Length: 114
Length: 114
Image (cartoon, rainbow over all chains, first blue to last red; front, side, top):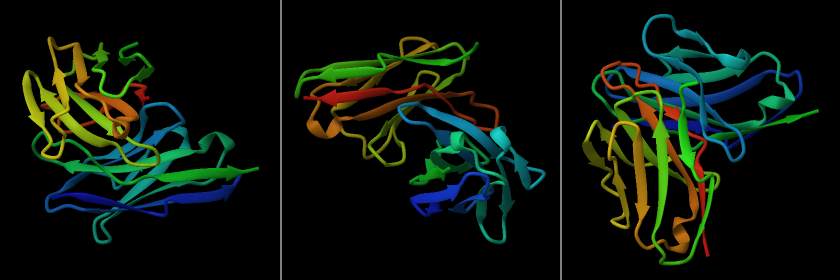
């Protein structure tokens, strides 16, 4: 079985500060990992994904994440927070083989303070 | 633009009155998913279609059913909505056969049960 743990249900940063959202996963097979963002009353938008190859993945809006197998982590970062980054962020995992639906973490709400 | 469309965006129903939510896609994806998302929680998979094959999650209540008359459309039927079914319902699609398993989400339908 696969699972995702997002540390911190709410993270608050100042505008211009580093954003770090933590995600740890559990998977018995090589995982595919995703970060989605959800703005209020909207669906989920894919930020970035890791499948194979380079472990540092760059996504939209200046976000990136690094897959660390030894730490079973896939933390999301952005060097400088912007007010428009305030949203809910979900980490998700699926198996790299087969057609398996995503398993989501509980989400982290990011607040950006002016 | 290719996309996932959900109608209506907001739906109000009465306790026990059947309601149907719809989803359409122009991505020509063969997999379609329905998720339930309650306030401040992660999306919870209800079921998904792999082409015409229906896959029900073990803990999805019998009150929830789905139809997929063709590749483009998928419906979520709630036979007798209860107050606990008030939530955001998200439709998503993906293309099976590509190991990426990237899911594309619609904007969601927010259901209110009076």
